[in-house]
Length: 171
Ligand code: HEC
Image (cartoon, rainbow, N blue to C red; front, side, top):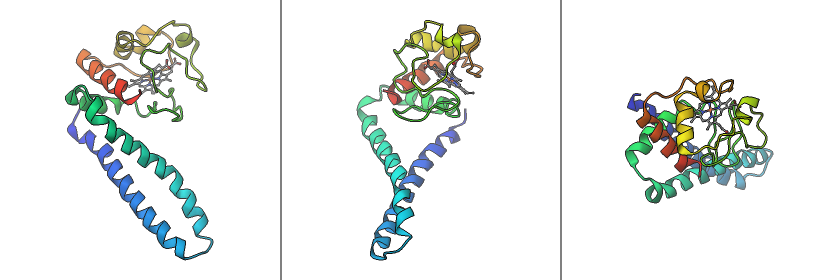
């Protein structure tokens, strides 16, 4: 996959920070001018603050936790294939697929608030790195009848990088 895929993430973070700075200025400016505009502005700042906290947290974790920066970068790119259907962080909403916070080491189909297929529920799988790797190589082969419409990742090294990334990002 081309390197340019890295850009949207970095850009998004920078844009988020710029947006936050802009909002802060707007909020400060607005505080002097009482009026109906103050209400919606204050509300708008709430979700953005959460985003900034995440960015700060991710930044703080990186230096100590990253076992292999090259694999991490590769894993991050590979995970772009999953983002349409999966969120990673604690408390984030399920998408088409379940939120994956702390998925590694957990039994399959155990996220509250998500409706799994019976196939996955009855699979008895625990998501060890090995089982996850097998599943990501060919979801339909490992769990026939799964609703995870994903073709699979061929290269073992890619799956290992993705799993290392997941392990770091979902802990
Ligand atoms: C098209 C949407 C889609 C894509 C793309 C997708 N998934 Fe999924 N995934 C799902 C769905 C839906 C389920 C639930 C499957 C079921 O209930 O049978 C699932 C289940 C899972 C599970 C099991 C979770 C649990 O709680 O047991 C893992 C792990 C997982 N996906 C990882 C990934 C990874 C990693 C990628 C990217 C390589 C990916 N998925 C790509 C839709 C997707």
